[in-house]
Length: 473
Image 1: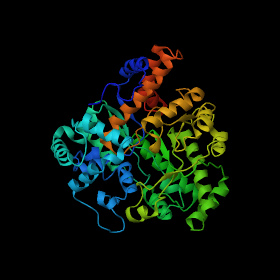
Image 2: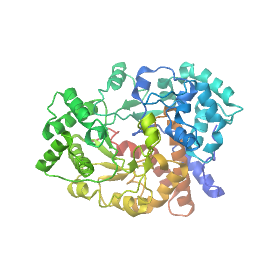
Image 3: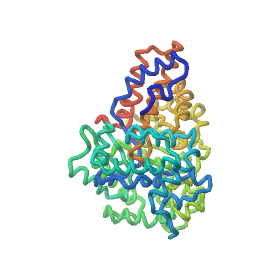
Image 4: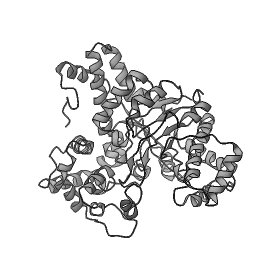
């Protein structure tokens, strides 16, 4: 099990304060307002597959590290899209991970995996080639028990809200099944998030076909730009009825642009006809962020912006295994100029709420903290993806707090497909915040009682409020 001083400061006085502060957050329910767990996992409530398919195959943090050392994803069971053979023997995949466990020294992947093994499955042995089979067998035995099915673990993890992420083309059948079952765990609920990227990016292969599917799903004429917007509004309403409180937008850049209705309609027709170039596609994506902000003024969905990832940078990986398999790379991102058109239009409107993330931490103090400190609509999202490590979380607090404070941030999000790692990730964030607050207390910057209130807010109250999960408009 996790050592009580894990990730706390080494200085004795700060460590003691951190332990005391952590107690105020440790047992608070988990709020997971942004993630990628498949809702079918909870809707069907079937036992998990073998350990390799739980810990390795779907986790591109793991597979990309091994691939960087010359171990092809096919040997790790990552499905192919080109018809090439992949390993299907879970024990072989697990052994390959264990034999190369040294590669994960110092990484959050090792930290999360070992916390899951110890805290969720009660396995404290160190993973290695020599222990691989023993740990694999113990995991198989646990996964066969009713207490380790998804719904039972949801309750055990003390999850109050779990948000999944779906395309507007998803008919939300898994969420409908959960609603029909009347299930969300004792005191908990599972909600969806509206993710329209594949419908607003003309550069994404198959875009026109997906737009046509949107028309079929909604029964609206998407051959015109007003019809397209109406269809998106229709799907947003369906998502809201399924519990959604936010939308999510993962564009290459943070660019926003406000076009006239006529210019937007012309650009839409050009894209549908296949004549849009890269600049047109960027203009359309940028304009649609402003359109979605307008929609949020009416329906209340919180906008999450996740810019800065160059998708499918590893061409060979993409061609063999498809999207979301570890081939994406962060890119430098401008926010000050890119967001100005949207903020000029709606940045001070009390109805709008935007949670802004980055993969470019050079912008934390130069751009993001001042922006969040200057516009009531903006909140800073937690360090994301390549930055959600203990040191990344610590750097975030150190670089944004003096300008943006704590209350222009939105609390932690786990942003994971790995369901069993959710409590581990939240625990790491709570420990890092306890350590940071302990330093402020020890320096005389913050009284202990205010630090105790702050850590509870960061862990629980702020994400509930910012993501409108408290039932308040």
